[in-house]
Image 1 (cartoon, rainbow, N blue to C red):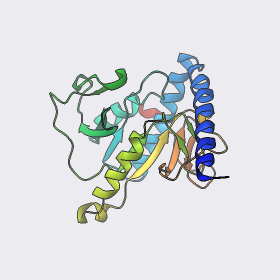
Image 2 (tube, rainbow, N blue to C red; image 1 turned 180 degrees about the vertical axis):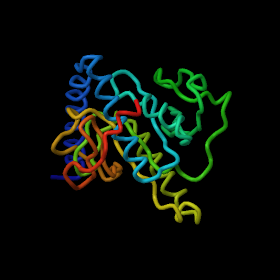
Image 3 (cartoon, rainbow, N blue to C red; image 1 turned 90 degrees about the vertical axis):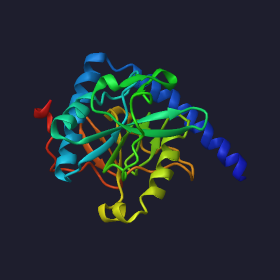
Length: 225
């Protein structure tokens, strides 16, 4: 099979999986989505406490994505810096902004609530300790199926380049962890060379470290919410 044929096959597999997983995620009843989100955010906060993370980049939920608002509220209470991306459709790039309240957001590209650039300055400090990313499907080897725009892959490239500073190297590379519902886990996500693999994924059932079974010994942390 030629490289062109292989890329076409991969593209077809991704389209089919996106359609399937979008439908599956949208069919989760709102009450169940809310409870699963609360539980997943509890696992996420436990992971952050375990590793003493002091900053995070996190998406603002859109449509049926796992709701990250409980994790954001917890982070603010704990004094953890909350950095949120803003999409730039023209270049399919992302800018980062630190937010301290929900009213610093306004509707942005694609109707997603994003940092208001008229009120906030870009975040230019060293990369956050952890990046929480959305997706349509995940696997246990770090595979992630996004929405096809490549925004997080490009952001990863920018962050990896910025992580070469002395201050960033002292802290170690940031973690990239997916957030989703357990039904979004599949055996294998079709991946291209440029697709960034994650370090793990968190669902309502716990933390799956890439390359291993679900990690044990982590408190669900749901008492915080």
